[in-house]
Structures are given as structure tokens and as C-alpha cells.
Length: 62
Image (cartoon, helix red, strand yellow):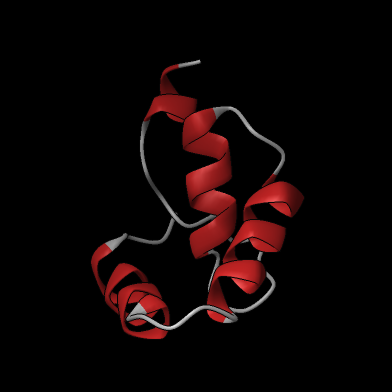
């Protein structure tokens, strides 16, 4: 249970970098829903891609 509270990009549930899987695990949500929300947000103007890249660099891998 303590491992679910740590924000780490998993090695086994990655689509691109594991950022959405890490956020989904941390929030206790299926990572698929986080991915759907991330893709939907990419359709809106804003720095979503930049934030994803920053999260990719800052969130450590397992």
C-alpha cells in the first residue's frame, strides 16, 4: 500500500513514458482514464505537452 502513495513511473504499464500510469496509480484511478483525460486536454490550447515532458523528466522511474 505504501508503494501506491509514491509517485513513480512504472516499468510495466507504460504507453509512452509512464506519466499517466504514475498519476493514475497515485490517485487510485485506472490509468486508462488518466490517458483519456490527457489526450482530451491536448485538444485544448495550453502547455499540456510541455507539462507532460516536464513530468517525464521529474517523476522518477521504478
